[in-house]
Image 1 (cartoon, rainbow, N blue to C red):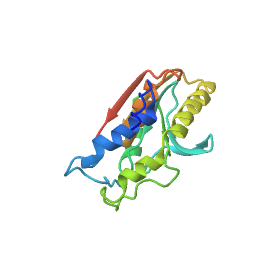
Image 2 (cartoon, one colour):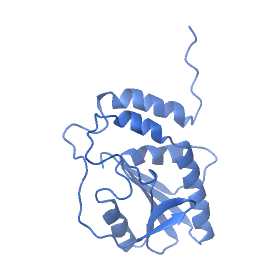
Image 3 (cartoon, one colour):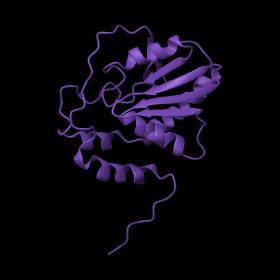
Image 4 (cartoon, one colour):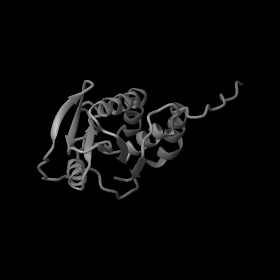
Length: 178
């Protein structure tokens, strides 16, 4: 029998698989947590397309907070309210649509394929997108960058900041469950 390969430092694929296998055995969110938080809020920002991906953007400051959504995506729940609120205290807020308009369906139960759906999302292209997005924002005069991420987005936020040779992020706040 061949032994398991020794994990390489910052091998996010390896650690993601360990996460999926161990953490999600009993499900992603704690029993009794809310599924999709409906909100009748009317957002104030703009949908733009940057690097072939839709983003929600609000605010005009050199300090940028990149919001990384939960599994319900950049239109789900109260995420745009949070973006607008943060921009009101003096930040540019960028909320990418990492699921390309195909988030986890709000009516679908977590025990109906969520683990497989999360694995299908992958992270490689999302990590590359974040790096390219930050480079693009620097060209626009943005100077400081941080993450606030929720649920699934927390994993992406931590993975990004754990990689070497990646653009420096000034802070990362992760919230789970969102």
